[in-house]
Each structure stands twice: as C-alpha cells, then as structure tokens.
Length: 293
Image (cartoon, rainbow, N blue to C red):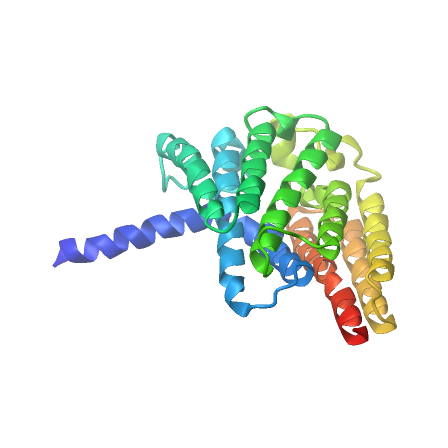
C-alpha cells in the first residue's frame, strides 16, 4: 500500500521541484510573454493558449536550471526556497537536468514548426552566453542586451505558437517583439534593486550597484516614456493612455520611495503588472484595424 502511494508522491515532489526552479519567473516572464503573444500574434484560437503557457514555462525552466546551477551560493543569500539551497535536488542532478532540457526544448518546439525550433535554439544559445560564458557578471549594458535578446527569442516562439500560421509573424507581431526588446534592454534593471546585497557579494555589476543615485530616477522616467510612446504607437484611446500613464507614475514613485529589500520586491511586483499591460497594448491596434476593416 505504502509503495503504491509512494509513486504519486515522488512524481508530485519532482514536479513541485521543477515549479520551484521557475516560481519567481512566472510573473516576470511567463505571464508578460503570454500576454504579448496573445495580443501580437494575435491569439485567434483559445486552444492555443495552454500551448503558449507550457512552451514559455518549459523554456523558462531550461534557463532557470542553467542559471541556478551556475552559482548556487548566490541563492543562499537571496533565494533560499529554490531547489538547490533547499536541498530538494543535488547539484549533480540539477546539472544533468540542465543539459537534458536542451534537446527536450528543441523537440517540443519542432512539434510546432521549424521557425519555433529556431527561436528555441536561439534561446538556448543566449542562455549559454548569459550563464556559462559570463554575460551575467559583465558590464550592465552587455547583460541587458543579452537579456533583451533572450526575451525576443521567447516572444518569437510564443507568438508563432499563438498565431494561425506557425511559420510566420506579421508586421504587427514583429514590431511588438521589437518594442518589447527595447523595454527589456532599458528597464530590466528593475529586477536588480532587490538583489543588491547578494549581487554585491558575488561582484555583479548591475545599474543599482554601479549608479545607485540615478538608477531609480532614470527607471521612473523610462517607464513613463515607454508608456506614452507605446500608447501613441498602438493608437490607444485617451482613457487607456491616461490609465497607463498613471500606472507608470505609480510604479516609478514606488521605486523612488523604496529603500529596503521588501519594498523593492513590492515595487518589482508592480513593475511586472506594468510590463504585462505594456505587452497587451498591441491589442489596441488590432482592435482599431479590425473595426476599420
């Protein structure tokens, strides 16, 4: 009896371990990219939605396992609930999982289209550049650029899966991905404020560490500029423009007022709300062009 019950327990334990690898990136990556893919592709068949979510999550898992096996000591300071510091998985098994996920991601992507597999291959290559080749610990501009290109790979793959033609992205989808890359390149430092202590210990050069006095003010300004620029680009109506402008001011003000790790964590949650809203703005253009046609 106990042996029979042990099997589902073991499976659930391992599945929860995989979830813990990706837990912190559900809000930062899975949700915003799913929203962008649904708005930009656009999502015309609701049955595609579970495919988008799983594809993005599975590739986030590939990235996170790589990232968390690179420097486990960092998580001892910043994120002790992750699988390695929590001793849910050995370092050796985590490394095996990291490399086993590479062909698994490519195989999954190939089931959709060759173009989706290319996006997956690009993401795996950028993961290696970021982690194994050290871009994560280099100059903040290089780190931001590799991050932005990584998100482009995520978004291209997710948008291909969302659309009716999994071999092609139209001009609106391409422009959406390009704008998203710009957002990530210029505002990805939003996630670094809460990790300053751990990043300092390992010598990482993030904007909040290198430029502590201007990091929050410039981020607040960039959030507002992106909101207004995207509202204009995607032909958002007046009420939508006012709403996202107020949201941008609120998130920027939260960063300016924050001073503790907990406060920066709350600000980062709000940033991800802002990011998700920005990623949904292409839907304004889709709705406008659909009404005119």
